[in-house]
Image (cartoon, rainbow, N blue to C red; front, side, top):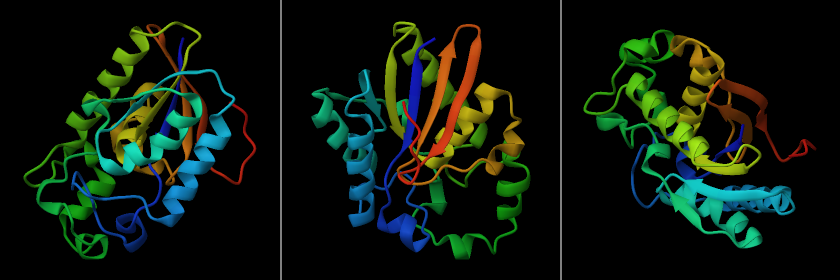
Amino acid sequence: MPTILLVRHGENDYVKKGRLAGRLPGVHLNDTGRRQAAWLAEKLKAAPVKAIYSSPLERTLETARPLAEALDLEIQPRFGLIEVDCGDWQDQSLKQLKRLQLWKIVQASPSSFTFPGGESFSAAQQRVVAELQSIARQSQPKDLLVCVSHSDPIKLAVAYLIGLPLDLFQRLNVSPGSITALSIGEAGASLLAMNVQPDTDYKF
């Protein structure tokens, strides 16, 4: 089974200020995010990475770029790895959103929630999992691959692939700039590491 390293993009000012960036264009890494991207490149520069895939948004591409340069690989954008479509909630303050009655559904029963004017968690999960399975099928069994994505898509994929109910996916934690490792094959998947951050010495 190929091993896929799911990388959450580095910090940006939307993350820092607690706003929902969604699919807004023009959201770039801040200084902390750029340091996290540099750490990723340093962490994986000697790893036998065969390919780098990324959500097409700027913050994910910027996270992937130092690693791609270190390994002399091209970044392959994949729409299936893009952030959940937050619809009308995009660019809103999380502090304000948490006051809404709908926020309780987001946290307690996400399987029944669709963002107003946007995507459901269920549809997002199916999209991301289908993308990862497609990438795995076109790879060799011992390949090491990197997919740079976003917090909710990574958590949704992990939940599905390890058999965790969708309504519990919010219990997972994926920090900015972190690495989560999965082996994915036709017979199933195995979670190898979760939320590896710069202050850890996990070897890939």
